[in-house]
Length: 103
Image 1 (cartoon, rainbow, N blue to C red):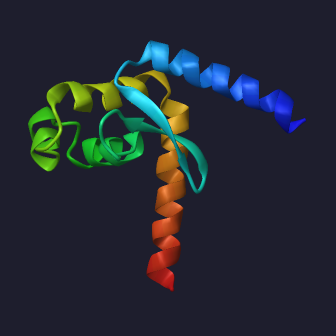
Image 2: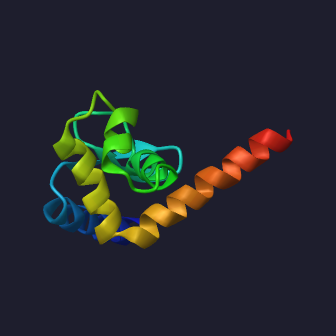
């Protein structure tokens, strides 16, 4: 069963890569995750900040001065194309943070 799923998952990744240039997928403890190409930064990290600064482009750039505008735009385009996936990652990260804070 796993062997059947793997090609389907890879095909889905290829379609996402074609849809949003500038994004790559990497292995993480929770599975495969979208990252900004050329960085170790996951899309959810940029989107979390994007939402925290009220979607202000200038504040987002100030928060990630080492990223190029095209790298930041790639993360936003990925979020716009696959919002449910990114929102699920944001929720998971928030749950982990909540657990950490209560320990």
